[in-house]
Image (cartoon, rainbow over all chains, first blue to last red; front, top):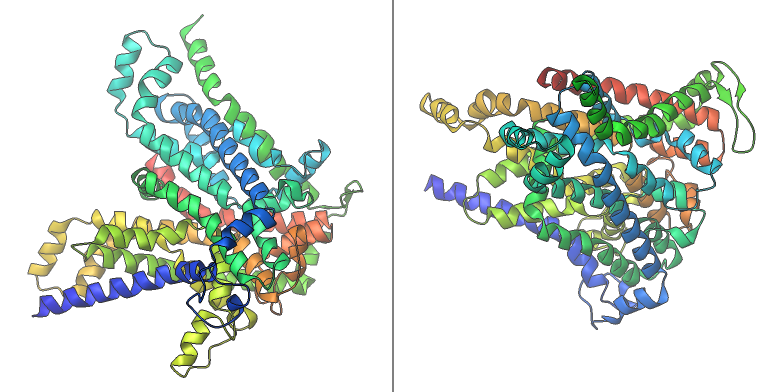
Length: 273
Length: 303
C-alpha cells in the first residue's frame, strides 16, 4: 500500500512537471496559429487555425536572412573549432611535454572568465581592421582554438586507452597519422558532443552578434533579429510566436538526432571537471 | 634531428593554432583591459592616463551599485534555485521505473532553447492582463502580479525562466546520483536510516563534487547574465527598439533587471566611456577568477 502510494505520488509529480515544462512552448505554438486580432485576446485556443502565419514570417519579415546568417555563423564556427581544437586536445591528453599542466590551467581559466572582461579591447581590435558589422569577429577566432572545446575534447580523449596509440606508433605512425587514423575514429562521440555544443552556442548566441553586427542589419542572426522582431511587429504576437517557434525547431531536431552524444558530453564536462 | 627536438616540434605543430589564439584573443586583450582601465578614452580619442580615477568612480556610480546589487541578488537566489531544481528533478527521475526516458527528455529540452526565444516565450506567458498565466490565475480568483512589468516581480520572473531551463543542471545531478554506490544506500537502510538520513549521510557526500561544480559554474554564468535580462526588459517595456537600440530599455522596469554586464555594455558602447568600462571589466575578472579558484584547486589535484 505504502509503496503504491509512493509510486502514484512520483508519477503525478512527474506528469505535473512535464505539463509545466511543455506549457510555455504549447501556448506559443497555439498563439502562432491565431489570427492577428485573436492573438491579442486572453483565449488559449485558435478559433481559426492560421498556418499562413508561418509563410508570412518567411515572406514578410527578414527572417530568412537571419536564418541564413545564423546557419553560416554556427556551421563555420563549428567547423573551424574542430580543425583547431582537436589537435590541441590530442596534444594535451595524449602527449607528454613540459608545461602541459600549466597550459591546461590557462585553458580552464579562459573557460571561467566572462566574455565581457575582454570585450572592449577585442572590439577595438576588430574595429581597427574594419571588420565590425560582420560575423567575422565571431567566426575567425575559432580557427585558433576554443578553450571550452579543447577542454571537453581532452576529457574525452583521456578515456581512449593508450595501448591503441602505442600500437600505431610501433607500426611507425607519426603523431599526426596516429591522430587521424586511430584516434579520430574512436573519438567520434566526443567530437560529436563538442561540435554540438559549439553549434548550439553559436545558434543561441546573443551577446556576440549584438556586439559586432548590430550596426549592420544585413548580418543579423536569429537571436538578434528575434529580439528586435518583437518591437517591429509589436502587436502581432502571433508572428512573434511563429518566429520564436522557428528559432527553436532546429535545436530540437538536432537534439533528437544526437541525443546520446549530447548527454554524454554534458556529463563529461561536469563530473570530471 | 635529435629526438627531443623532434618531439618538441611535434607538440608545437599540435598546439600552435590554439597558442596563437590564446595570446591574441585572450592574454593580449586581458592585458589591454588592465592598461585601459587606468586611462580615459572613447572610440575616437587615444587613451590618456588617469591613474586610479576609474576605480574611484566605481564607488560613486549609483547605476553600478544598482547593477551589482541585482547581479548579487541573482547569484544568491537564482543559482541555489537552479541547483535545488536540478537536484529535485534528477531525484524524481531516478525514482521512476517506467517512462523515465521521455520524462528526462521533456525536462531537459527547454535548457537548449535559445535564450532570446525562451525569454520572449516567458514575456508572452507572463503578460499582465491577458497573458495565459494571469488568465488562469484569474479563473481561480487570484489577481496575478505584473511579472516582468513590476520592479518587485521582474527578477523572480527571470528565476522562473531559468528554472524552466534547469535541464543542464539536472543532467549533471542525474549522472552523479546514478554513481552513488547502491551498497552504501542499502547498508544505511538496513541500519534503519530514514530517507532524509540516507540522503544526508550517503547521497550528499557522494555527489558533493557536482554540488561544488554546479555552484561555481552557476555563479560564473550568472556573472555574465545578459541576453535574458536584456530581452525581457525590452519586450516587456513595449518600446520600439532594434539592434543596439535595445540598450535604451535595459533595466526595465525601474532598473530592476539591470545586471553588471548590461551596465558594462551601456557604459562602453552607448556612452563610449571605454576606460571606465575596462575598470568594470577588471573587477568582473577578479570576481570570476576568485570564484573559479574554488574549482581550479580541485581540478589541479586531479591532473
